[in-house]
Length: 209
Image (cartoon, rainbow, N blue to C red):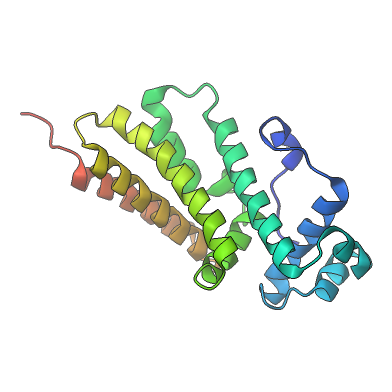
């Protein structure tokens, strides 16, 4: 079973949760990793979770409803972890803090289920409007946080450059997540992080001699 983030540690930043629904969504995420998004049927989910498929049907009337609820939960978990991460971090340190975390979601102690499932949803976004909307919310929120951090570090940058750079950094970070899922070595993660800083340096004004 793929390691999952401890949601109990994020209760302060998460919306209220219902245990039975959470159990179904946990099993759905596991089924996605084993069978792919399209192969994660109600029967597969029930098998993965060790419960009857009627539990799935009771809480989620259709697969589309379950899919949307699951991606929304993952987005909420990312936001909660980011909020937790930034508590007490000085404004001038936020950029490095965010990039370190985005390059290694939830601590970098091995594959995390939520990050791996996001990869599967990214592949699905081109054909599923609900998934695309939720992922865009995720990207936009991260880009907003990075924009603030970039503006603190590089106040000379104009707003358009700041936001486009922040969005590019988010895209780079999720490209890294995809590579990690394929089992690439740690060096790839570090290279992706270096690429983020190279991108920042390419748009940041050169220091005055």
